[in-house]
Length: 226
Image (cartoon, rainbow, N blue to C red; front, side, top):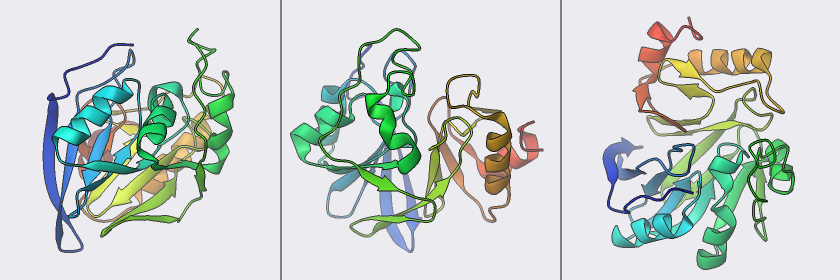
């Protein structure tokens, strides 16, 4: 798998419930150019959104930014989003969250696409916390609300945190995730996009691939949401 310099990242700051919080985005990792994000609390703990390959790069990046990864929030169970999760847990004892419908993909080469793309098996974490639609994950003062958005995979989710949506492979800038792989369902993805379209307010969207966008922009310009 490709690796990148741990110093290559973009930083964002926003307020959630009146408290400043920092998001740092690593440069895309793995052969699939997968985005991952650190959301750092006031205490220096961090939630990692998705765990592509190169766990050492991710861990070194967190350390250099004074953060300790305590929680890994996975948007879905495909290998380019989960490959580093087990090793990060082994080294930090962090919690790993994934929707119940995608939890089994860790041990399923067809479901996690490692078999589909001809890669080796994905390491299985020793413990996983299964989540459902509407759950709230708390990391110190920060709250992540789980929105189940099936379609790209049966257990795909978005995490809503303050005025930010981590959309995984559900919604991209002017595009959407693929549905032509095992467990994909275009009809369900269209229903999930409608859920996002019905959300009111101004939100920045940080997707699993490509550049960030805003929910308003996608509502008005993304052909799959119009």
